[in-house]
Amino acid sequence: MSDNLPRRDFEKLAVAELDAAARSATSEKRRAHLDQAAIFATLGERVRGSALSDN
Image (cartoon, rainbow, N blue to C red; front, side, top):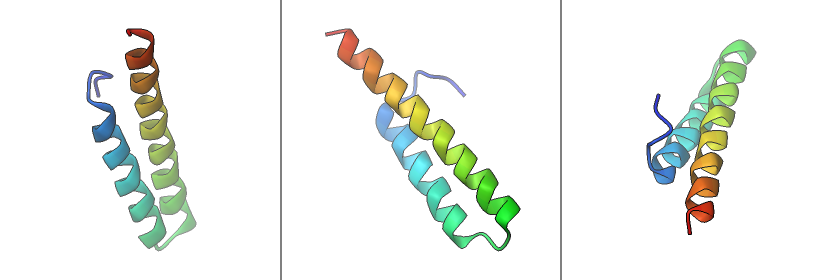
């Protein structure tokens, strides 16, 4: 996945993963969704940080 996606896309992906984690039947699946949500949140923060530093 490219870091060139808008921050809002990463935020939507993170929220979707958190929702999937909440609905997960097993702790293993929940953990995988939470890990992925953390990755998307981090990417969103990087995009926001680079947008702020470009100003």
